[in-house]
Image 1 (tube, one colour):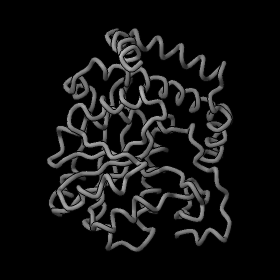
Image 2 (tube, helix red, strand yellow):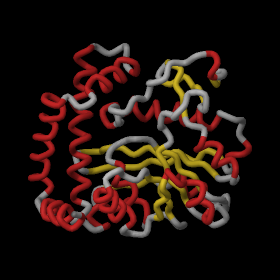
Image 3 (cartoon, rainbow, N blue to C red):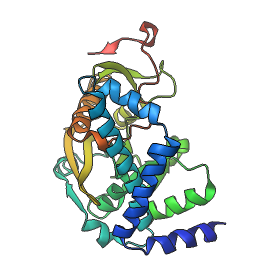
Length: 292
């Protein structure tokens, strides 16, 4: 089955990107108007994040989001045909934050968010950083698609660490120079095991793992913001935060990260992954204090 699916996708990837964008437009129409894929979730998220905007303005952001989402899948298809130089023509990287982190001599944890197109970040950085590049990924349920995505992401040397076995898989790298990249804006599985922070003016749970993991190995911290500059072209900006995560008060790094990604989202709201339920948990006092 793998070779059948791969063969079909590989043939489609040979089509010019401008032609594939027609499929993206068609997919947008199906997702938004017919299937209405997670449309209620998207609109609810936008109403929480942007209460000051009109319904028409939020609908415009939603439509642009779905266009970006379908573009992301179409562009990812091209990775079966492209080589790294094709991506380098379409991806600009400001590595000033990472350059500062090198000077610490410590492992580097780079925290990003679910912005599109995340696939460019991997190929765009793996040959530019001076240390082994590690990325956390969530294995797909479908084994065929999991192997295809795994092969794409690891093609140029990225070391993939499965989120489902992170502790064991990451252990052998913690004493070596490396850069670990992760999207740290996930909603935690349980609201009791979370940092609660005001995010877009609403108490919101953030996972503890990113901060605690970095503090445990005295890693230096970099925040990363990647975004679209024009269709099919992206940029990443990096900001150095600290030489040692363990020196920060508990919850403060995550609070700073929440403020950073809120600013990034406001900069280009349609590029964020609004289809995941960022505010699925309502705050209760028994969950702990809100970090101020």
